[in-house]
Amino acid sequence: MKSFIFIFYRQLIGTVFLLLSTTIFERRSATPLTILVFFKIFALAFLGLMLAMNLYGIALLYTSASLASAIMNCIPVTTFFFAVLLRGEKLNVRSIAGVAKLGGITICMGGVATLAFFEGPILKPPFALHNIQHQHQHHVSSSGSTTWIIVCFLSFISVSFWGLWFVLQAEVLKTYSSKLHFTSLQCLSSTVQSFLVAIAVERDLSEWKLTWNVRLLAVLYCGIMVTGVGHYLQSWVIATKGPVFRAMSTPLSPILTMIGSMFLLGENINVGSIVGEIMLVLGLYSVLWGKRMSKI
Image (cartoon, rainbow, N blue to C red; front, side):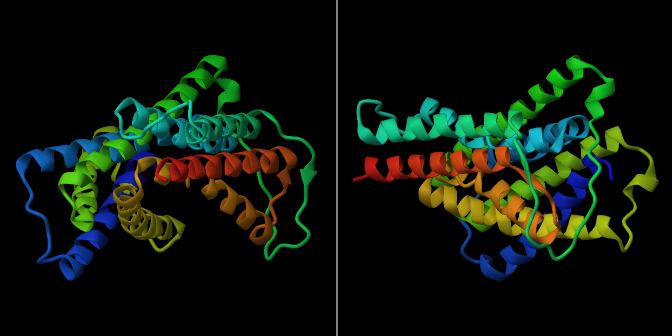
């Protein structure tokens, strides 16, 4: 399925789900919406949903899944950088809390590098509910190092946009506290934006068809659970604990994916993945501990 079309359908399903939820739960408790706030929400949707996701989708077509996953773990680093730059996060390197934050970010970067460049021995799962065979295709092999550099750059740009997106969301949520309406408006805006991009890139109507297969299942799951439920919970966490706290949960995603893939699908894992994930978790809790100490 073309990534541009998939992103549009995902945002469309998420928007429908969120609008229904808003009608049920926050129909009468919404914060008044001004033109300025709506413009900020529209810009946030363009930055973090339409632009970042489409750039990442393009890069994923031409690079390996392992490298794409490793680059995703740079989100805590970019979020922390923008939070400090925009004064949303305090960093005092002369205090224990500041050293813990900076050290945690450094450990995260080391974990990302380990995931990307170190494999080590392969470990087979002791048991699995279902065994599958994998075919790893490296699209870049025939395009040369120039394409590889370009897609890595696109991946990093998309991750940077996500980091900035988290920080800017925290600022908007200070003035517009209706989190469900906030998420719904973002998804609605990104749906319109994604449709314009998708229809400009792909005019073949056969590519837009959805039937009762895994394509429809993927669209429904990502639209309802990831875009709908996930983005709402994300905005709640950002408003409550800040953008850095939200971003530092990103390394938990590949850990859970690795465990599920190993014991449910029978995938083999290598020692480098385990070492990299351990470093990411250590960096995660170092930053969170530093944030807690800075508030005491």
